[in-house]
Structure formats: structure tokens, C-alpha cells
Image 1 (cartoon, one colour):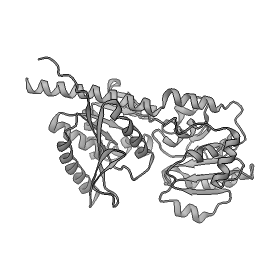
Image 2 (cartoon, rainbow, N blue to C red; image 1 turned 60 degrees about the horizontal axis):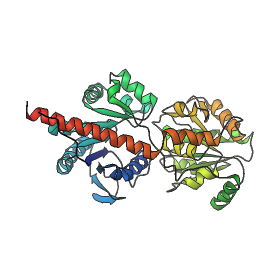
Image 3 (tube, rainbow, N blue to C red; image 1 turned 45 degrees about the horizontal axis):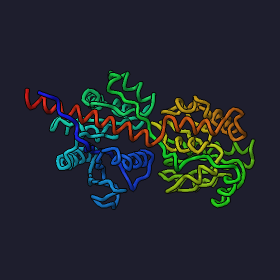
Image 4 (cartoon, rainbow, N blue to C red; image 1 turned 120 degrees about the horizontal axis):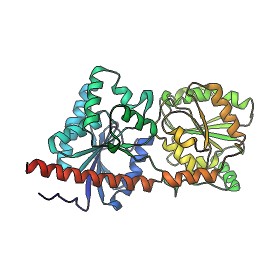
Length: 390
């Protein structure tokens, strides 16, 4: 029997725990990719959990988004998510299911694969001690679940060397690990001239003095509370230094109550372009990461970065784009911030931009995903043919 060809347009269902209106890095990355997929022949829909009063169904930038109500204990909520998502998948009839996280989304995708033979891609959102694999390895049932998921996923879209190594260590062969890092919109994030930087600072109400910036969720895993506690040590050497903290989360109240001198809490910002342009250094002291979208945006703007050795940071910053420190090295973090704010002698904003342009464009990311979906759709079509005519 001759192999079936892939249709001109591919239908892809995105399974995720959260989506817009949440604006974390994973949500913003998926949204940016989704806006580019239609021009590449990919018709996508999003199936996610409903966490607020958002409607059960809406179009977000032209993309259908289904939000599932789940309630009760974690196990019951996960089962409810899977059952309702399976009904939506049957209605949509995707050629490929792309699960964003190894927990409920990938479990649901595999269940649909068993039912319909549809190919599954999975994205591990982060690695390390707080990553998807580590969470599943924390219990006997989780380890069994992980083993089955790793065997049945057709392809992993890998965003960092750390995650790639974890998958390899668990026996996932290289042909099922596809390096597709997060991407950044290079038209929006770009370096600015020094006189323009002064003007932007004035418009944001920021001082014309050395500025470090953090952008992300204000949660303990980001260690933003530790960065705030260490900031007086930076100012003891650079008295005029200012730390801008952009984002919101469970620590927002405590950070505001601390009233630390030289720190500006900017809150949630829909558009960070001007804030990056106003800064001199980007800092990310996280305990765990995948591939930080905020770091990519900062690098595209030409900023040097100070970050902990987690996620994709070592791959990025080892190319002369900033300083790496160990997670628990407080003195190293302070020293790196001081050195970077005082100006790294060998740092080149243009080099940072060139690295991002070469490897981390959102257009390249979308193109690589579209190619992966076409390959998986081909596998699905021919797998179903083989089943039918066996």
C-alpha cells in the first residue's frame, strides 16, 4: 500500500496548563509562535485549564482557545482535565497533539494517541530540581508514569542542553529529541543608542544611573527575594545603582513591604521593550529555568546578563554575553552584578544581538515547529494506514 501524503494544512492541538490571559514566559512564547503558524500551513487550537473568569471559549489573536473548568483535589482535577480535553480533541480531530509540560498535558496527549493513533510532540518546560522530570521522579507512581510517557511520545521539542541531557539519561534516543529553542521577536526587541536610552529612562521615571533589571514571575523559584536582600551590598559599591523589578506573583506583597532602597517595583508590564532599553544589565537568579524568554529579550536588546547556572543560561552566557554564578553563591552574584554594572571590558551589545539573531528568532522557532508537525503528521497518516490494512 502506498504511503499517504501529508495534507497542505496541518491541524495541531496545543495542550497546556495555562494560557492567555496569563502572561508568564511559557504563555507568551506559545502565543508568539501561534501567531506565526497559520502562514506556515498550521491550523492550531489551544486546550487549557480555566483559572479565572475568562470565557470557556474565545479567539485570542485569531487562535481558538478552549478553557476547561477543573475542581477538587489534584488527582480529580487532572482526571477531569484529561476527560474534557479528550472530548475537545475528538471534536477538533488534530493531525498532531503538542503537549506543553510532561504532566497532565502529555498524559492527555498519550491517551488520545492510544484512542486515535495521533502523533504526539511534548515540550519539557524546564529542567533541574524543579523541572517536569524531577517532579515525576519524586514518587513511585510518578516514575512509572514518566517511563510510559517517555516511551510513547513521538518527539520532544527541546529548549536547552540541560533538558536534552535529562531526556538522554532516561533513554530517549537522539532521533526523538529535536532542538527547538524558544524564540524572540527581533523586530520588537533591539538595542538603542545612548541618547535614546536617556530619553526612555526619563519617560519611565527612572534615574539616569546604573540600572539592573529583573523581569519574571515573583515566585521563590526565581529567588527574587534573595536578590532584593542582596541589593544593598551592590549599592555599597555603586551607591546610585537601581534595581528594576518587573512582574507580579506571590512575593509581590512582601517585596513591596520591604521598601529596600534603590529598588523600583514596576509591577506587571504588558510591554517590556522600553524597560529593557532603559536598563544596563539583566539579572536572573533563578533556582530552575528552561530557556528564559526574558533573558532572550534582554540579549536581543543588547544587554549583558547575570544569571545562575540553570536551564539554558550556561549555553547562552558562555558565548561572552554576561556572567554565570552558582545558585547559592550570594557573594558571586553580588560581585558579578557590580562588575557588569561597571562595564564588562569585552562585552559587545552587537555580539549579543548577533547570537540571538542567528539562533533564537521567533520566526526560526515557528518554522522548526511547523516542520516537526509535518513530519509527525506524515508518521500519523502512515501509521493509521498500516493499522487499517494490516
